[in-house]
Amino acid sequence: MPFFERLRALSRERRTMLCVGLDPDPERIDGAAAGALRHCREVARQTEEHACCFKPNSAFWEQYGPDGWKALIELHEEFAETPFLLDAKRGDMGNTMKAYAHAVFSTLAMDAATVSPYFGMDSLEEFTRYEDRGVYVVCRSSNPGAEDLQHLDADGAPLFLRVADMAERANGHGNVGLVVGATAPSAVVDVRKASTLPFLIPGIGAQGGDVSASVRAAWNGDPASCLISVSRAILFDRNPSRAAAGIRAEINAVIGKLI
Image (tube, rainbow, N blue to C red; front, top):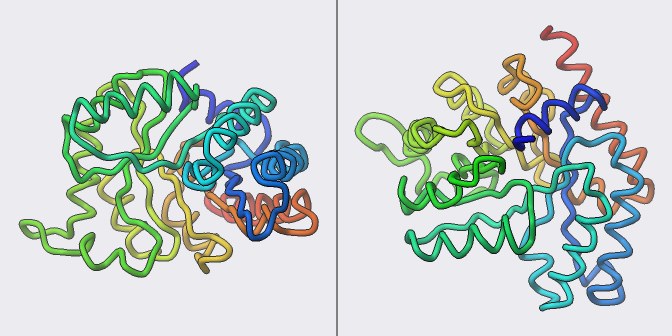
């Protein structure tokens, strides 16, 4: 089943649009890669019923070397019923992106990935050619420095809206979405006006993004339209299940008022 169809089906089945980030930090988790695996396995076990996607950030597993990759693959295999979205933000020229895509979708067998738009359409096509996998294009990121480049004028519109337009054109296989940060709710509104693509919305929790404002801005009736990503606020909570359930309830309460 294509990624976005799986996402929609799980969202309906579990009544959730929550994506749980699995980003192990060796300063907070003992035991190197094996410890990271144990911690994230327990978090996944506690939160799977509340989530429709898991999002490991590539860097947090790469830092453990080969053992980190092995641990991530093992984690994915154990929780295969829930899609894994590798947050890698890959971006390069065509032949390099072809290798990146093979690594992410064939070697690691991830269900979706984030990519950078900076190299243009031919770069994105190396990922989107995997028709059953999801490809989220970074549109407006959640960090403070996003405005340095992403808000620059590009022929009468901010650059991030030009990225949204390019992503629409890259969506020939129906497997493209956009990354739009919760820390800029007005940008979420602007991108939703310009695009019907599914959104991945990071920045909730530790970064201070607002769940309610993000959901109201992004939700368009599509169960995949508003994937809310939360990492540290769940991953390092004393009770990840309770934390995930609370955020899911908050998301659903907003959607309930919009339906």
